[in-house]
Image (tube, rainbow, N blue to C red; front, side):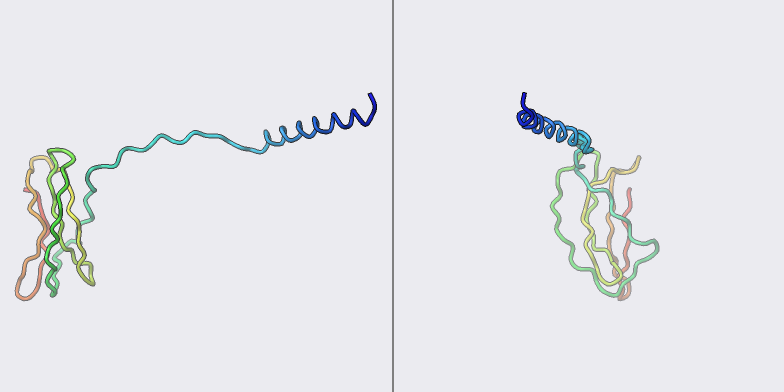
Length: 128
């Protein structure tokens, strides 16, 4: 076989072998996607409570929002209605949510504001 023909045949084969070897050494890793997480819950976890102690402000809270109550995630859950909460510089609305009552309790007495002598005092809700 003549030298030019050998070179013409070997060069493409050598280049192909080098390219394949380079791809195998490139560090590519193939993984599968992780399994999906748990489905979203039908209720929100309770928001953080207002600070301990009496919250007393001079400004009256706005009128409450009328919230649409979605269906409970379970018949044992109780709706905890939304309320205006004082944030230091003004009111913000804390939306209602479903919560499971502690053992032995079945009713939620909601958070509220009481007007006392020209001020408004925040009364935290409780289970009863």
